[in-house]
Amino acid sequence: MGRVGGAHGIRGWLKILSDTDPREALLGYSPWWLHRDQKWVPFELVDGAIHGKGLIAKLKDIDDRTQAESLYGLEIAVKRDQLEPLEEGEYYWADLLGLEVSTMDGIRLGVVEKIFETGANDVLIVRGEKEHLIPYVRSDVIKEIDLAERRMQVDWDPDF
Image (cartoon, rainbow, N blue to C red; front, side, top):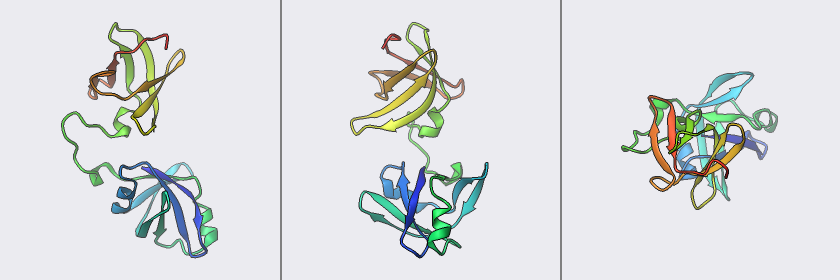
């Protein structure tokens, strides 16, 4: 859902880099689960706001800059049951990570390793024998997604 970008001020507030759309949607969830020391730890969101191009947030029991700085870089997640149900044909990024990707001709390209936003459209990083950057454009490029079978079919040149 995002990550902690650093400390904001001296009272334990955090700079937050949100992957939600819109970015402030992240402030509607609590608790946040932060990935710390190889495990997910819950933190109650006390307050938050849009701040410039990002967000700031206050978590319960994080009361000074030193505590806030200790959370720098940690991933933020929420439990699946906190998320809104999606319409048919819509997917959360987390659903797409790890899918096997192949072309319309059955050529295996690799696995969806990461997704990023470009403004025009999202881009899938698919890693196999080589890395492919595939635009997430439904119907033109992304032809089929089967979550049950953990696969995706794309109209894409394997040499590109």
